[in-house]
Length: 281
Length: 265
Ligand SMILES: Nc1ncnc2c1ncn2[C@@H]1O[C@H](COP(=O)(O)OP(=O)(O)O)[C@@H](O)[C@H]1O
Ligand SMILES: [Mg+2]
Image (cartoon, rainbow over all chains, first blue to last red; front, side):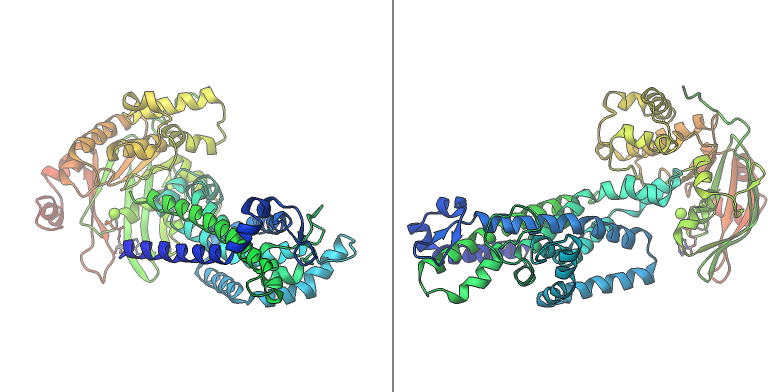
């Protein structure tokens, strides 16, 4: 059964990859994979169009990495609190808040970001516009928090209780027990949680499209407007000629995104599996 | 330099009318006894009679369960350890515990044993080295592992892991060592090694050991306390406590005799 599921997953993933590559065949033939991936200019609609992915890759990376750095400390603290310190009632409330955060549609996060974060960032950093990488990252940080919190919480929860007991019985406080034994024991699960959060952040489309300003340039700082991979595909796909070169390039861009997220998830899964095996004593 | 402490004469417990209630169920009640320093006291009785529960009163690990209330008075060398002012974290550096299932931390042998001392602020490498060696020697493991102290504790056999846990508990130089069926998950040879260790340890610490193995209690303990729960409606109580030899040859209570001769439990 497990093997069947494994194989069907591979077949489905391969099918998606082939489908995207088929859609991108014309671009791969006419422009070439290397030129696309290393090109530093993205002007898809001018007379002699330039299809360089680099500004979009940097846009996605800037927003994603910043979001991870913003979200990780708070999410990890929340996971530790829920797993190690909260009583049953608080735990349930916290878990339903997290479930709710995960259920809010991305466009709603975008609207909240437009209403609060964009003016806030503009004000706080004294900018002409708040539509930039930082605003997108702040809102993304909230969006990926449920993933990071719930998966780290699982990893902390999986640490056997007798390790906690052992540490407490040696005259350690709960807090010492948490950072000396529980967190190190769950470290690979926490790492996987962060990676899955990253996968979610790279794939997120609507909120970043609404918040980052969408200028497809290589940004000089986080306070400049950026365009992500997902934002580009979503924004441009509706205006292209069916079967045209531009459309095919967007398929190739989708293929690149698919490969990145696939790799991140694969590594996270391997790390999680290693973590699980650890307690099968 | 950390000097070896033997705590000779320290680590005696006095229990007065001790009871433990889990939620609404009183598991043990009316337990009064004296636990002698530098001796081995065995707690015996059928499973579910509250041996572990009583043991956890002595280092206040019941506090960590969240649903347990302890009544009565427990004095360690004359000091009430359930006093509001008494810090359970402090108590546990004086009263160590070895658990039923070996529970080494996922780290090296060295780091396992140095864990308690590091919490107590001992940082100097030479001090830690000395403590680790002494503790592992007392736990009768030094000879087997001195060459690979950097080995992950999970790579050791079950019996070795349990002796790492004993060394880990000894490293904080406790006055009392609580052991909850420390050999129940081990093979006969490892059990033998643990029993030999216990015999040597009482020179340094007071030992309270839970066991459901009568022969083991007879072999290793100086005093034996027999607990019993006669029905689920009533809490368990202490039937009698006394010299192990007397208990096993000439028990004062018919129920003790019945249990020792294997008629129930
Ligand atoms: N954490 C707990 N919560 C509720 N009841 C418990 C808990 N631990 C033990 N008990 C109950 O207390 C009684 C004594 O258990 P225990 O001390 O484990 O006995 P023993 O160690 O002699 O087998 C049992 O009825 C058990 O169900
Ligand atoms: Mg027990």
